[in-house]
Amino acid sequence: MSGSREVKRRIKSVENTRQITRTMELVATSKLKRATDRVYATRPYAEALEGIVSGLYSPALSEKYPILRRPDEERRAAVLLLTANRGLCGAFNANLIKEARGLMDDLRARAIEPELHVAGKKAVAYFRFRGEEMLTERVDIGDNPSVEEAESLIGPVRERFETGVVDAVYLVSSEFRSAMSTPPQTRRILPIEGDPEAPPADHYILTPSADVILERILPSYIRNVVFTALVENAAAEQGARRSAMKNATDNAGEVLENLKRTYNRARQAQITQEIAEIVGGSAALE
Image (cartoon, rainbow, N blue to C red; front, top):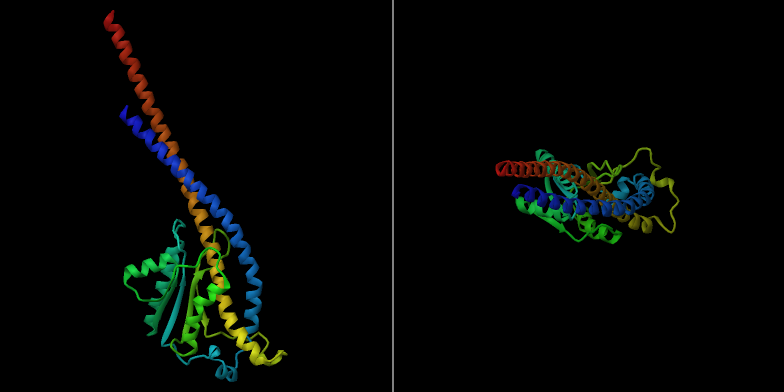
């Protein structure tokens, strides 16, 4: 009898767990729809801006605008890692951290000193535990990142590049391909890479003036790269959480089926034993 009660308690516990994971799956599905809409809304502007900026480089402009400088060699590089603030999203955070660690190991192997800038509680906790120095620790960026948050994150790093403290800036984030495919990616966002197929800067008619436009468009471009990455990361996190919670819900259902079969067999054995005892007692009375 005690065995049946224990199985029944386990059934109740798994049912409660399945209800929680099912609710989290529904919440993640709702957030994923909004996050996906933001991804598709930000991409056209990001692609158009990248197309314009990629054709702006020239040696003369790089002397005037430090953000366009191209160091002869990399001696120190900034690594900006974006992760989530919460878990329960499968291997999403672990994959991003692994990508960043691989990048830093590769930089060190090439005699380039990396400096780490992190946004996301999971990565901050991981690197604190490992004793890795972080120049930036941001845990205040939520599910709906803003352009202002992107600027506050990349602004100090961009300034370090412009002043020559670092020679390159790498961004590690998730590439949102679909809700089921969000692989980590590494992108070097500074120095700005030129596109040989893009129209050169002197092919543009600039109004009010080239100086005014460039002073605004160049920082805006880097800020928008990080903002787009934050938006895609948010969508990827919800996609990973929805998949993880769906798998947990499905697994809980399988466990429930096994527990119910175990409970039914135990009850059947108990009833059979009780019937046997009644028959035995009746035979003894005769």
